[in-house]
Length: 96
Image (cartoon, rainbow, N blue to C red; front, side, top):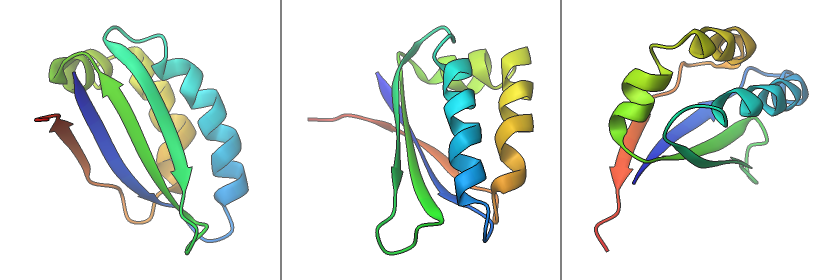
C-alpha cells in the first residue's frame, strides 16, 4: 500500500466552491482500480490550504491507472483550476 500526499493551495475566495467540487470528484476516484481510501483536511491556520491523502494498493494504480484514465480528465476539469500554485504530489510507503 502507498499513500499519495498533496498540499493544495486554493485560490483566494474559491475554497467553498472547491469543497463542493471535491465532493463530486471524490466519487470519481473511489471507482478506480487500486483505490483504498482518501481524506481531505483543511488547514486551521490558512483556510485556503488543504491536505489530500489517497491510499492506493500500489504506485501504478495512481500514476498509470488513474492518471492515464478518462476519469482523470473529469477530475482535472473539476479541480485543477482551483490550485495556485499547482500542487506537488508525492508518494509514501509505510516502513513501520
